[in-house]
Image (cartoon, rainbow, N blue to C red; front, top):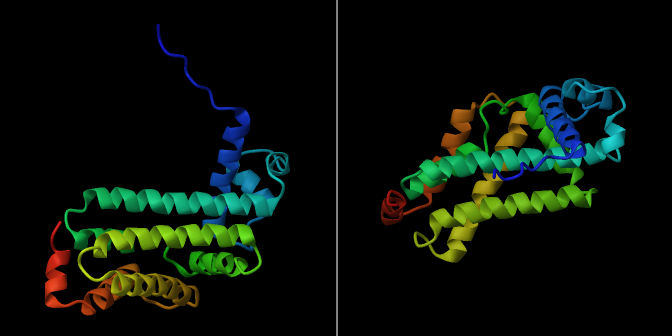
Length: 204
């Protein structure tokens, strides 16, 4: 006898479709361009149906940020699985924080506005803290046993600050490319290490 197929509730499907559509609209039009009409149109659903499945646009935005963070994490995990050395892992983490399709001024401006909202929105602030903890954890796995914990923590904080700073500069129209941004971070980090520490990074 074949096992019963678990069916997904239509409500869950619709919410997933709307969140995915909100993410596409966000990437194209930014935060200010995220109207309920555009989200419903992108999802191929009737105008106004969004309010049936969500409390409002802010609720969709929150779920969209969670969705985007999950996509970033999945991409980084996939890159980490292919890494053979600690340096490969470091490169995978940095590259994963600069999606090739998203590193452009309009998208950067949209994300800067979301980050700014964390000052007043506790839900966004919680998501941001979770994101930073994951980044810190991923980087800690690279530097554990290579440098001391205190120094490793400083390097991890510096890496996070550089990632945020380069996205901020991109939002202001900085012409730096994705490859250049990644190279800046990797070069800056490895420049802080001794020859012995850099050798350790070249090991599994």
